[in-house]
Image 1 (cartoon, rainbow, N blue to C red):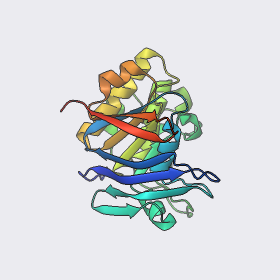
Image 2 (cartoon, rainbow, N blue to C red; image 1 turned 30 degrees about the vertical axis):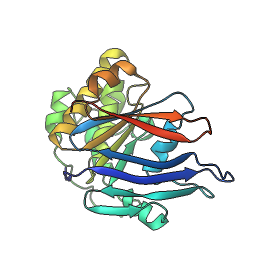
Image 3 (cartoon, rainbow, N blue to C red; image 1 turned 90 degrees about the horizontal axis):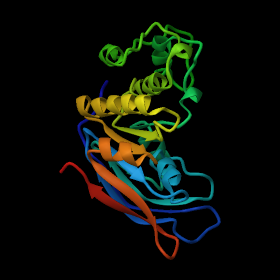
Length: 241
């Protein structure tokens, strides 16, 4: 898996919803270092999902966003739609409903192959898979097993490995343990922890699970707080420093 050992830095991010002149985020800054799990927490409605979407470069019609993102050696002006599309190639996201990302009638290996297909695939052989055999073995996942045969935790791991089949710097995970029991949740977080360390990834997790956050977040813990005027600010705490 080709990754780059560089930080992800956000400079002066501001955002407003369509038809609203009031800032939802204003002047936000954030710096995340590789090799760690970072966390986003906040009350319901605080803006976690909105921030998650902005980090993917997904800005809807009428919304206004400004700021600079530094990823690896690249700087992106998020106001520019073309820059956001290029930025998105450096950032991969695993959504909360991982089954929407998986072809359950295919094997694990076939899902990993399909993850490398371009947006408009051509009629040719499926691409080779970047070697993840150590991870699969570590978490007892048979590459020849059908995804429908896997546990919820194993499916989550496969979805994560699919996103890492293409070169990426930043991995965003939306509530990766929300639908899992305690045992599977810990297995998934252990896998994420190992991937962050061994591949020097920047992994940012949105989670409501305080215990898992306390246990596994080793980098920056980001709390979204709402001010009296409605604008959201990011309060950060460095862990493990």
